[in-house]
Image: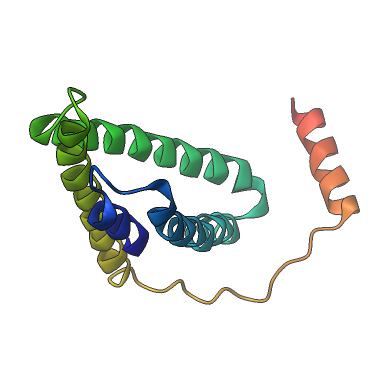
Length: 142
């Protein structure tokens, strides 16, 4: 959210690329601090045999969010600017990136209201023999 707001703030027609680099670094750090822990959280909240489904659902939802994000921000961009000139581009870019930043802020605030996960009982260890037994049982029942 800070990186996006930074990009919107420094974005002007005469801004050189070097002025965007610190904001891009902040954006990269922010994404790395978000996406890896989310994947870990999702996979650690389901049983081992459900990890594939959970991972697939998480990726599908992330992709869907990206599609809607691009659509909404493109709408904001086109409502305020366009590709006719550099000034028109910046006129559309700044509000679109500010809206994106605001959505990230709302998402972060909403995470404060998510109840914490319940502590699970002692972790179970799955051995190779357990997996083999499960596979044999599935093959026999099929």
